[in-house]
Image (cartoon, rainbow, N blue to C red; front, side):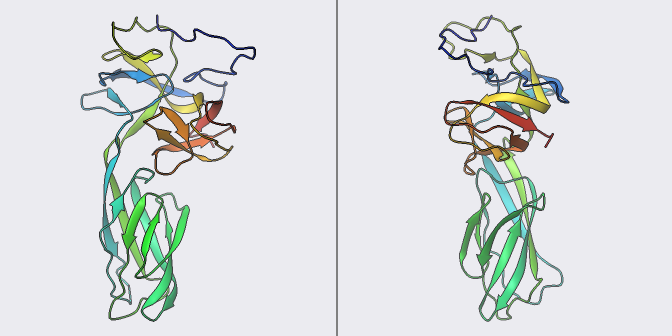
Length: 250
């Protein structure tokens, strides 16, 4: 059986990574672990290559295409869009809100309709996992002119769920670095909805979006890390604290 904890302090932790936090509505699915290093309890898992397979969260990759609104007055064009960790899969909307000669301001909202940031025509924009420059054209943009930016994630693109702590796991193989988790080829349980305890990798606040840092294997609010779709921090904490994450319930 995997080792959960070998040392104890004066004040026990309120939970363990991957532990279901309470009796709120919860859903779990079974998937076969494909990653050679396994998937640790509390770690996000993504769709694997085989049927019902799952891989651990790691490197991020994505692409984006843009399309001008059919009724645009201005004829400026969107430059190449760079996608980084923190981007959401789906269609972002850019709308001109303050037109100006050879310039103008716009706002960007994400695929869920959430405001990302404001930007300016002919100036570099970088927020929400997107980076681009909307060029000025011979005809200036008018208020309401728009662009759709469609993001497709090409690595770790399909989030499955969070690995649920489970005592029914076999001993790890000699030399394995996996301690608390599902080893390769084991059928693991992954929470697709519910409340779970995880480890914060930096200061996080109640109600904040949840991101995964594959380097530290902890959760943060840093938008350059891998975003966990539908997840919200349900408690606050500092680096190393056990905090509660709500998945698709808030």
